Image 1 (cartoon, one colour):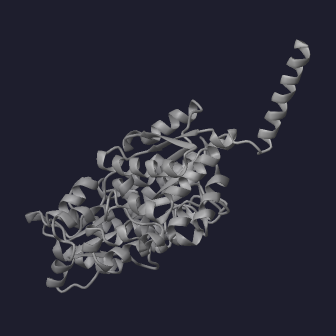
Image 2 (cartoon, rainbow, N blue to C red; image 1 turned 120 degrees about the vertical axis):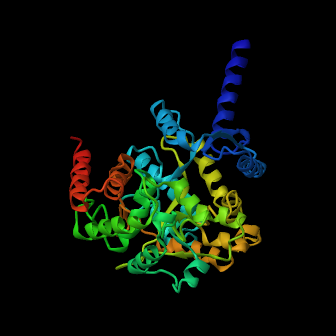
Image 3 (cartoon, rainbow, N blue to C red; image 1 turned 180 degrees about the vertical axis):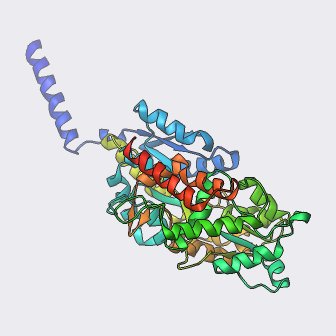
Length: 434
């Protein structure tokens, strides 16, 4: 009797398990899935915002728990590489567009999962430029869902230029004329504060001039095209313009300081100069111009949320749900407003959110805020050609080839022709693995 009872008990347990697996039971619904979320917002005020977003999410989705991994920005990429090697990548990660390319090349991103999020949010709600920056190389999918971004251009002191008889500088020639006029090196006054250091910022600034002259580092086939006539024209111009900036290797700090203390009435910088301008009370006196030659090229970058490859189904579903939640306009607005003025909306619906419209920094800049956000539709970057977002551009940027070239020409007195040839050769050598 005992043996028959034991067999009957086993049969009942197996049948119960089968019914649950077929979706009839509640056991799987009650199971809590924990995912890790790595981001670079380590400051307390930013963590407070993210903590609230996660709390709101967990309140809506009681079967998902989110464990944060805040990492300092300077150590972020290294941390990703270390975790990838150990097979312990977080399910959701904040990534820059450039590093997302590196990760995608190493097959660390679940493109299908990210594409699913983009479709759920609504692809058309994003600015075209922001969306293009996170396209996969074949243009059919995405490597991250944009959550915020910034754009770069020439910021100028409207009163200083107006008093000197200048309108908004639009062309290369306009910028050069203004820079020449205001330069008085003996009295430490310069016409433009611009990047010349061996840094990513120098590549970014130079790229605007190159792309406005229809010069790109890669062509539609992915071939390296650094040493070309249009690129030579752009580098020659950039070298000439650098005669009217501060001496030495100028980077983020030097450029921002020069513009804010009125050493120069123009500066090539990102929107992250706006918070300082707001604090200084100059929000009504700042103008924004895009260098233009044959084309109008806005340089911009996005911060996106990506989903790791290789997750089990439960974690993948939880990661998708979490990224979709953060990508709602209301939540994207909260993310952007962690740094109002500096971080910019990448989704047009964010501009309709009351929290965004009523923010004092956004309001202080008036129509300029919407103008800057809309400029995401005109973004061009090296390596983005005819809808193809080549992953190898991430390696070229990481190698510092373009930044070295710009620094050598502007600070080192190098020849544009020679340095372009050297950069072309180095990029080709790196690409071939020699």
